[in-house]
Length: 187
Image (cartoon, rainbow, N blue to C red; front, side):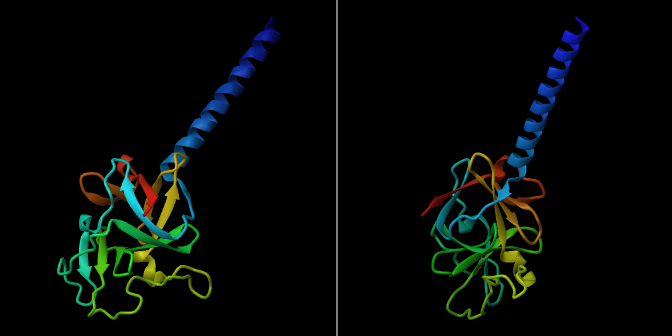
């Protein structure tokens, strides 16, 4: 009788340990995701509430004189993403006349590039350095795309390690929340 109870107890302990292990593993994966390599191209980036990530959601800055809201951001809803390294991308508008970046105050902004702006690489370097590292001066224009198990994505700034969140307002958060998940749909 004691041996039967010991076997049942051991089986229950193993089952509980396995369940706890898989729940913990799934929660951490869902929360942070893993780096992904989406194919370069134009995508509509949409929040889980169905709201597209558009340029007018954040402050556009004219690239030459850095004046706020002096240039009109692109009306195009698509973003051209370009891979820089595994899981790391640059977000530009089709036609390369606008690019997204993280400002020093941890807000998301965009450089609007017009005819008077001839600054080379204002949107950052499109490839790693000769040593294979990310260009330190371009980190503010690099974003990591992390995929969760349901196929949705987090967008994480490489300059401040914060996650993009699009609820009522667009903001950057230290930890992702329910408004930090996005869908990428080919444009």
